[in-house]
Length: 117
Image 1: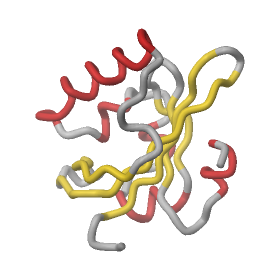
Image 2: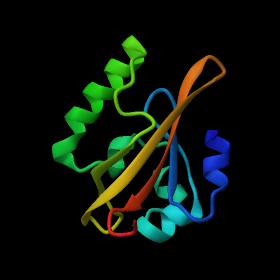
Image 3: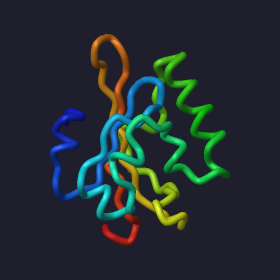
Image 4: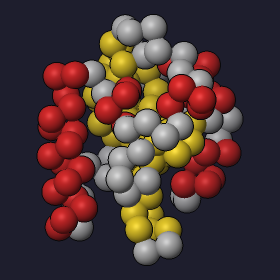
């Protein structure tokens, strides 16, 4: 599945980011589920939706992948917390993919509340 196909998905919340970890898109389902609008997130770092205690681990993992090309979390389901627009923190199931676009990595993830399995 491509990032474009994920973003067109109407049933699952999806967020996309570029190689710098900057949010490039979210779909309507993401807005409905987590309260963020594309205007609030587009151009912001992914850390905008990552709870503060998890941000350093995210930055380390993201940097390690970009420098080594070795992925330890791509293509598998991960239960991680997400910060909603109202400031609450919720456990959610993430499924992250990556693809090369214009010789740079792009990323997208479906992020669904863990209670919606």
